[in-house]
Image (cartoon, rainbow, N blue to C red):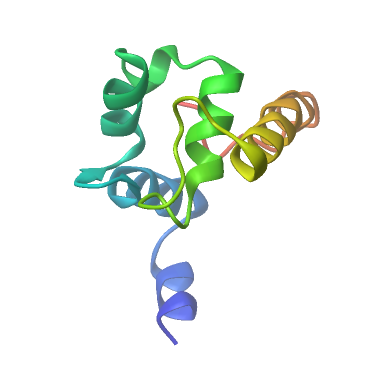
Length: 99
């Protein structure tokens, strides 16, 4: 019910903005920017594709997965996600994220 309501009221860009600002990226860390600062010492606008992939890979279990010194699933999935970034950009599927 809530998903349908949110998608009716907000566009994709707003949904992504809210999610990226409230997603738990670590214990006591909320939002992609806070995660970037915590794990990589710079804000999200400066994340490399590998760093962004690692933060995305810890979701939805940031209390059990680590973006720093990743092993197993986080390393493999993070690498897959970082490779897919270029596909998304090349296909123009990132329009909801552009400013």
